[in-house]
Length: 125
Image (cartoon, rainbow, N blue to C red; front, side, top):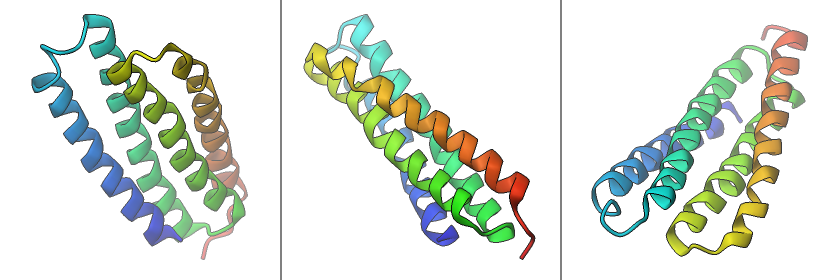
């Protein structure tokens, strides 16, 4: 599982950099300043949690267990829900997508808590 989270983190980081560059260059003239800020927030949080997935992969290689596996999946889910809803909100202007975003934030928070539990309870391999 640690390899899967490392791969997911690397791919997510790649996509975050690509999204950030796309937003900064291709979308600057198409989006309002508010929409661009929303898009940039999505890219920033995607990068944070791509790095979190790499941390989960590293921690799982040292202290394997359910809490770390759970943390990884919560970060993946949070990225899809939080960042995905913000990207879509910025690109489409569909306001109800903003109501979904906090659910992704809760997934991120739960992921950080699960990571902490996994590291605290972990028994070295």
